[in-house]
Image (cartoon, rainbow over all chains, first blue to last red; front, side, top):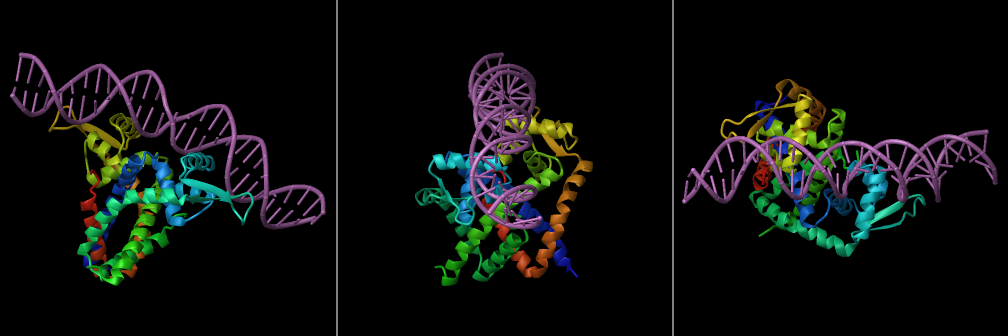
Length: 148
Length: 148
DNA sequence: AAGTGTATCTTACTGAATAAGATTCTTATA
DNA sequence: TATAAGAATCTTATTCAGTAAGATACACTT
């Protein structure tokens, strides 16, 4: 059974998470704009940075885009030199998409300012607290993985 | 100075947060689809639910849409009965947009399944841990508020 | 009272994403 | 092995969400 304290905590946490998510979308837009990329293209670069080389089909699942939509985005990104398609050794119908290393640095560099901002915010948290927070996100990502 | 443990924690946390954000966008899309709403319209309903009645200009800031884009979205939502525009007592050029209460319930109901999923995930966390997590999100939302 | 600035809306247009179908390869079954 | 059914990606024509530029109405400053 839930404690009285918990009954207050849960709605507050729920609201805070929703606000966080609302802000995140906006922030991604800003970063994309800085790099003169479409928000969707930025999303793809993020996914590729997080997941490593994956198939277009996987990117469709993770982005919610249609098969044809993925093709168009990848064409744009490949033309601009951000990604490269290579043959998938496991399935000759398929393709593996990977970030071009040199460009990857330029992308992640744009996150460095927020990353340092993020880290300075975390100064107020002990190592134990950070472990708790990490546990939270790990649980959340398992409950709702990027491709489900 | 950072502990050795912290040096490992920070990148892991950073990655977990990014995965969480990537999954959130996808999830919002799914909920919007359930309600037969455009993702952007869903975003607006969320913002209105979180912030209460606000001006179209505020919604433009929080969503990243242009002024004209906001007008179009609000026209759609108002026509469908989700929101209502009323005159802003503080500024007669301006307008206040609010959720229609009856519809608001139908919207938030669609979040209940994930909310209960979310809460069952939190069973594994103590009250103290939840407070830490809440503190994290509160800090993050202050560092990067919904309209900055 | 005039001029400048701000909030919202209108209109014509752009282009991102979709849907449907084609192509190429894989897997299952006879 | 041969055939059929299924899956992964790409192509093409099309749609419609969002933008840009400008109009309107009101608010502030001097």
